Length: 124
Image 1 (cartoon, rainbow, N blue to C red):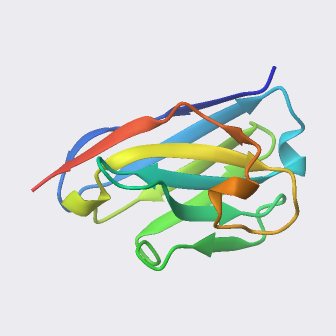
Image 2: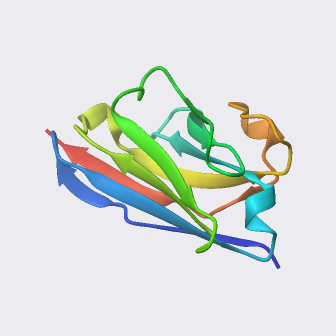
């Protein structure tokens, strides 16, 4: 059974930082591209970042480039999202996802497995 479990969300003031983690089980983690997406209330789910299978390549949405950093530890089956200089518009539920293809994709339709999400709330 494949499981993706996110953690690290919470309430933070604008300008603060959070580090999200996603622990994956039930699949060969190093064989999957990993991505982070987010969904704000009343909005569609949007791509945030993706990382290649060995962590050598990354891809970011323009809205978070230079602000967020995605990384992974294949020995721990974990992908991370370091979020700095947070703004109220970063408030959303953040989801990690696994994609068995080798390409860094920003479309949610290409991802095969999803976590339940973790809430990030940034107060002004």
